[in-house]
Image (cartoon, rainbow, N blue to C red; front, side, top):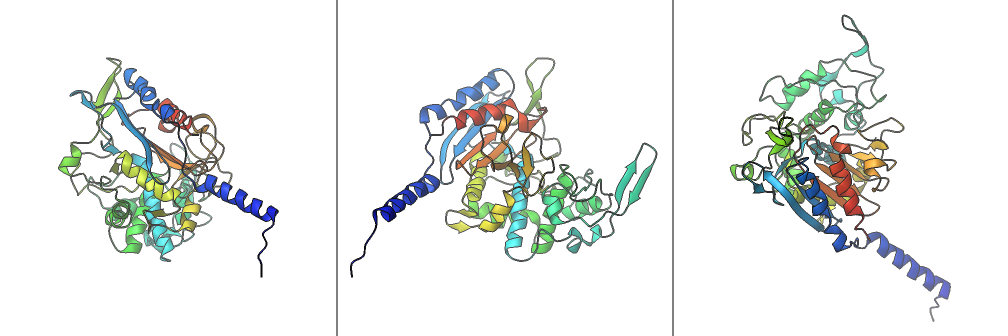
Length: 402
């Protein structure tokens, strides 16, 4: 019996193969245009906006460009290096969300569960209905807060300082639970460090091990993120890029400190804040985003299910206005570009990522298959997510995509 293949069928096969190569093939970059990134960043150094930067562009499989400019220490004129370590601040949040979703994959928790199921101190919360200088009216919220609310910053949970310098997550979250909610859960978006810190506490309650140990064992080690930690070694401290803020007297920059991580960076008694306590390098952050672009897999190791990654990186906040720039929405732990514009104008719909308080930025564009990592340590930016530094870096890198 002879097998017949019609010309139409053969043509269809060729077209399907061609388009599958476009989708899963390697991203093509113009190297000459990539090489323009350092000079674009150097202008911000020359203008005393930042002391220095590490910039990295990658696809889902490998780093395509990584360079440093400027200085990691202005006083000693120590040049910035690609392996410098940065406080990544709120870029910690997606990592905490991944930790929680690992437990979801294992069937140990659901994002739709009420927080009080795992943390009984959240039972019978109150909510602020009215507040003036001399009067506050409390009522019962329409429903308890859920883990989904925490991950999307829609819980209404109020923030407050840590009760003591070396508090545990249990102590910190207990203090949160005694505050009245600021609005009905799920009704609006309000950025909440308390919410993500509470997620970290749920991770350790459900897993039975400390939160910091869980992310080290289940995320950092499998991904080879050797320089990502809440507590640095002495040798790592020597590689930390110093933080700077504007000096109104000189017109330049003056050294500052990480505002809520005080004391010895090697002190393991310091609270491992799930909402913003991590230090890391550009290369390590890239590995985390390559895992996400590869639908939960890194170097053949599955960290998270494809379903979990899809849920985390797609809009979970409906039509609620979110984020620090226009056109944004929130997934679970990740900010998601809903309508590209302004600083996100060069990115595709569905680009996901997160910024940090001192200007660090990490974004993955799943349509183009490109990762953008910007590492700087600049305090007192008016809006780190909307900085010209971020915009120029992303635009210059995007211009190199062929």
